[in-house]
Image 1 (cartoon, helix red, strand yellow):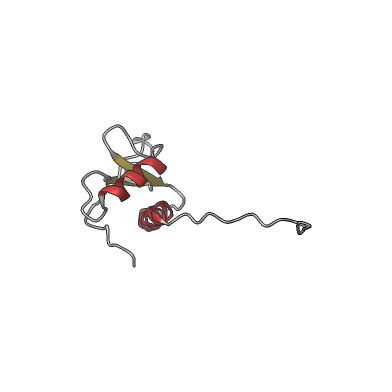
Image 2 (image 1 turned 60 degrees about the horizontal axis):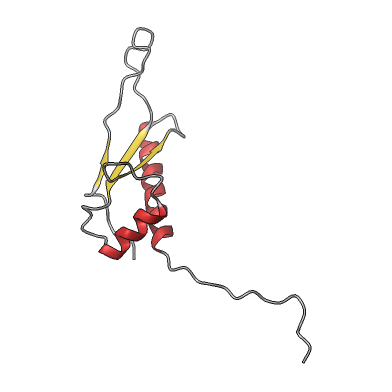
Length: 110
C-alpha cells in the first residue's frame, strides 16, 4: 500500500535564469523537492532512522531530504519525475532485505 506524502512534500519556486538580459521571461525547468524526515507523520521512528541511514548523502544539515531533476524542458514533467523518484527511494529504503543463500555450483560429496 502506497502512502500519500503529498502534504509533507515542499517544492521550490521557479528561479529566473542567470542571463536575465538575454532571456527575460525564461524560468529554470529544474524541479526541487524537499522532505523533512524528522517531522514526517506518516513514517514511524524506525522507518525514519532507516531512511536517514540509507540516504544520509541526500539529507542536508537541516534534516531535509533533497531531490532535484532537470531531465525535461518542462517544469511540470520534472515535478512528476521528482515525485516518482521520491516514492521509489522511500519504497527501496523500507523494503525488507531478504538474505539469499548461495547455491553451490556442484553438489558436495557425502
